[in-house]
Length: 588
Image (cartoon, rainbow, N blue to C red; front, side, top):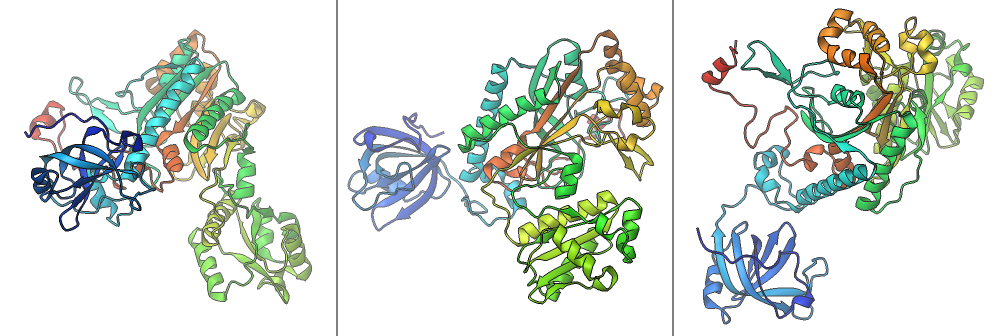
């Protein structure tokens, strides 16, 4: 192993005040340039870059060695800091006023040419970058992302410590309990045929900690879910897990808002206004078509049920009679859309599951729509007036059962926002969505399932209808939304054994099954459980948004692909027969 001198400075540290100093830098060769005798290299580490100059007349040996350098060689350079010649300073580089005139060069490690350029705007595909993640992580954009993530850790620890929270680790090997997604199972060698599960969240453990009297718990914790992946989802992810005793919804939300205020102030330099806006689930759906609405742009919805309920247009009237919704939104200035553009929007809406899309154009000739002969001129004008349309606008309407109508409109709204460049990527909009439904009916399972999780407390005003009409009952649940992304979700929990058993029963979990799966929690409630609630923040998703990335894979050091594969180390992979026998497993 070649010797090297311990560095005196990093590659991003030297300034004009260091001129005349003899220093040593260690790092990677970013770029090498030979200008006919004088050799320049940009030397890089995670702190920055410094330009190093090799003159043949100053040190022939170092100059000769510099001719061998290539990108990604690891080197140690000792030399004198000099001011750059007039007119050659680089204001875009923190070290742009100085050069390092090399006196000694040691090549610590040679490197083969990398399979793709290691710059921020590389065009290499994601699979290639993930296969060579150890190289991809040298790119400044990823190093900046991970350093920002580090700052988020520090802020989180400091914030919650100042508020009296205790950080407590919970088990990674736990009992398999239904949490809404498939578990990752771990076979037990000592107990053949039995399995641990990796935690989808520490939900039951943090509730147990409240029963134990710890009052304020926090943990930055790894969680695991075996579910279909997308840009903002990974099989293993990180969340900030929080639980508090003797609280109402507002208390948990106030703590969460304080954390967001510190993130935005210390990372983005932005002061956010508190308290944050709040929408109920129903308001969010009927205004934006989403329980995680992107409020950075308009195109909000109007329901026209009252106008069309008695119309001869059966498509609309029948939907209203069955309790559905006829609703839509105005696209300002879009009356100029061509017939082909409108046909494409109709097809897009049908592909979302809607029966169709009704549109009205307000052109120079007035309101134009293919359904005027069914609705009548007066109703068309009433619809336009109620939706706040004006000349030049396009009105889009969908009719269907309540949830589908608004969900389709919500997706169509986002699509129009993207097509018309209405979404400002430099704007941040936070809000709470509250009063979620307690349950939703699963057509696949033919039963009610918990919209959040089975430990969420019902709204006090809906206790009377909980058994008779569970689909209408509201939960004491709340989600924190940022730019159309759910970044945190929480609730006030059930803390009474009888109520927890009642909710289990509504979910089709009988007393015997509940005891097997959740007996430890039910038993804990026998011995004095305080009212409690909490929230969990999606750490990776927040980091993605704060860095401006489009995928959480860009803010995780070693992510997996959309098919849950780690291309760098080829995981998951096979194991030998001996390991399988020890675990009493046979692959069929």
